[in-house]
Length: 456
Image 1 (cartoon, rainbow, N blue to C red):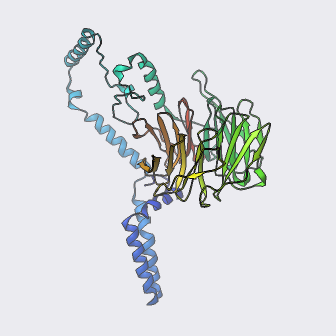
Image 2 (image 1 turned 180 degrees about the horizontal axis):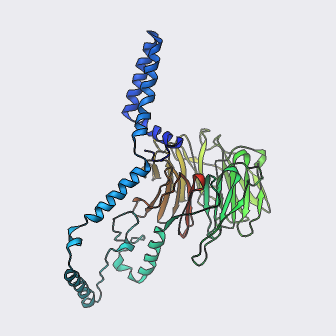
Image 3 (image 1 turned 135 degrees about the horizontal axis):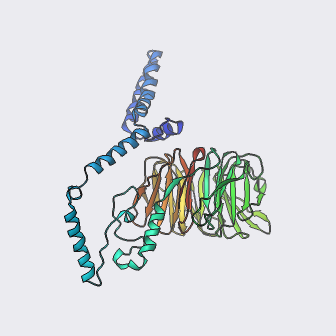
């Protein structure tokens, strides 16, 4: 259930979506119907009719524990674990430790080809007590000792999530980490934030690249994506807002109202390198607009409608040719010609509304929904994977790893073992989008009221 301490409207709506799937809701609906029928006898039966339907969800919502209470319970459980750890660990004497250490040393020094690899803190994922006995590539530790320092550095880096201060409290709706290591985030009122690449481990400063959008009209921006070389970023949003930014110079161009269309653009996807760019925009009428940038201008094709006209909620390109989009009617569609045409590969069978997509290429697609589930495309079916209880608003994929964020400010990681794990750091507000570069050197999630969480 929702764990917003402020009992926000978004938290109640998320709770109510789950509540409508319970037997209590069914009973409440039946009670409302029964009392409603009795209004033909006396009109005052309308009071118990309304009460029987309205009161149960309100009471249940108010009685659920807050996020603070839940976190306190988790903290207390961890403290109890530390106080009542395994008897073997608490009762071991110094003599025992010396004896065990001597035995291990004997094993290593008497058998030249033998290695003893102990699970230590560096071998554990944050927030998990599971020992990873193999590397991300599937190689047992004993067979990869020559590269062990590199693996340890990789594991330590991927665990380091931190909250980031940015110069805004405006809600950030989308984010893109470029291949050059810079970051661009877009939000309400036309805001575009930028963070320079990290150099020599120094902190990366965030600054405002655009204060009021590409057309200086202050329209909300909802999508951002970068070219494959990271040299150009495209942004899109309400009332036809579309813009192009060069990451090295900061120069931006306004391409709003493409082909005279002033629709709201919930998402944008970009393929190709800078100067030879494919741009795909989606709208609430279920249409995809395809643009081609070259020689300083964009040519736009006529729109295509992949599905039945239901509002499109997400779009992603793996390269200039292969990509996917999803709609609010459980549909997912694949393009292999850069958005000129789409083929349906749904329905997914989701219990909620589809939110976001991630892909590494053709026949590789993950789509998240607002019921806390990520759906993975197989050869002929979609396989659901429960991630959490809240809407999975953002998802991103790179080789060997998938990262998701949800409406409760929680981030989840899944490695090649296909296990979803919740990380320790949690944003104070809902997280709406997440992005990473292909090597995972930098990963950023953004959300409401300027919430930013970064891993590097």
